Amino acid sequence: MKPESEQQEDSIKLYRTGEHNCSYLDGQQARTLFLDPDLHFTLPLYEQMMHLGFRRSGHHLYRPDCEACGACMPSRVRVRQFHWKRRFRRILSKNQDLSVHRLPCKFSNEHYRLYEAYISHRHYLGDMYPPSEDSYREFLVSRPDLAFMLEFRQDDRVVAVAFTDRMETGLSATYTFFDPEQSHRGLGVFSILTQIQLCETLELPFLYLGYWVPGSAQMTYKADYRPLEVLINRHWRLLDDHLIGAIGIE
Image (cartoon, rainbow, N blue to C red; front, top):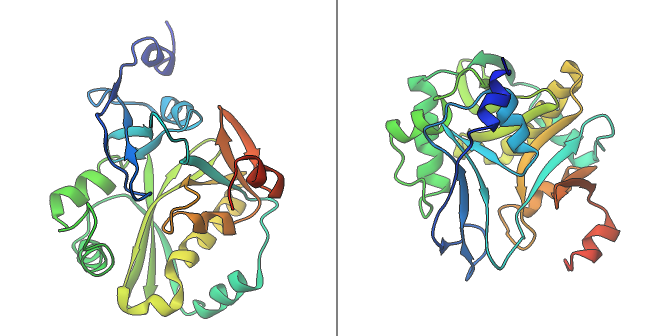
């Protein structure tokens, strides 16, 4: 009998949405390709689909499938060669007073209240507003078999939570939210740096960061985490000045 992952590969269905406004680039139309939402995918299949450019959101695996644009490129940090810039070391130092706890992926009222404050303050113009407990559960805690949480505390107070998936080849940074009143700490950056350190501890070669989208203010930050690889035509390539020039980014 074939392994379950191979059985799933034999029967995969994909669905494409119609065109809709792009979340990353103004004036662009986007399409999205989804794995069959009725398929309860396994971790091996999930990782295979990730290497084809898919990401996970709750029960769903998806990737951009735009007809006239290929700006969204999956990205991953080479952990062993990661360049610890002075800015990154300053952020580590600034957050030395925080404790970090690795926890099972499950719902917490305390975490949800922080998520609610974060979305309401930082993303009130986006698709995730207004926040709801149902959408939070579906998005972040619906697959505890794939994910865990990193909880960041200042004394007894939660100031940030990062949801992370564990793969054979690395960790995948799914979503981070934090106390909007403590933005001076650089908690989003600190979350990524903590996940890079965890990859080092677990001897995993990559931290997957989702889509790098040149031209999108909310996504270009990922290029700061070097060396960074991006997936182009199903091949992971190092993002360097030569590649940036080749794909026409100013």
